[in-house]
Length: 260
Image (cartoon, rainbow, N blue to C red; front, side, top):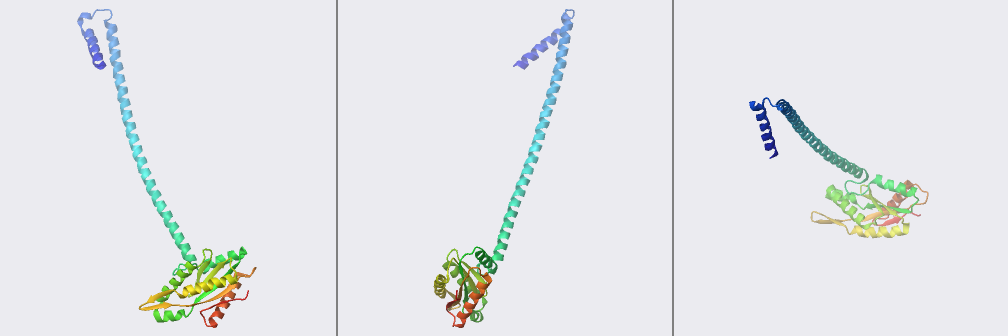
């Protein structure tokens, strides 16, 4: 409404200036100069408005371009973060797999020689009491020869599972090699270990697997040896091995202890 009134007023002023009737009026020239100055100022104001509008438009375009670039950069960074996270997870999985492979037997999943020897060294260093037991599956070679190594592997896995289930949480059962297993019975003397091993032997004698139409079960021989304070773990292992050899020579299917 105000714009229309302003335009009407200016049109009225212009008409007065253009009218010959007022040509000689004392205020005619002053009004004409004032009107021209007003028109010039309006032109300048409009020019500034146009410049401002253009600047606003350019600024908005620049902001949109910047925002688009930012969003693209953000998406790239998020993508790189996902790739990095996936790569880190893959490395962690590979490291865990490598650690598992280096410390556990691939067939049975039990700790291997390396891991149980590390535990033995720690027990000796900490001066903890323990008893070692070497278990050997009696006549295991016959099973491999008669039924094949696949059946032998099934039997090893079944025995391993039974040992893991029967032992205490703080004991360590490792596959020592072939059909031999090494038990690290923590904080246990020879007498207590003998009771544990006899219970284990009875439990293992009940383990069966099926080969064709035949059920296969086994017995085990065991050699026990209590660690002597200050004794290297290698010496304790040798004494346990000698006790196992005596158990085999005595007819197998039994456990014998080395003298403390």
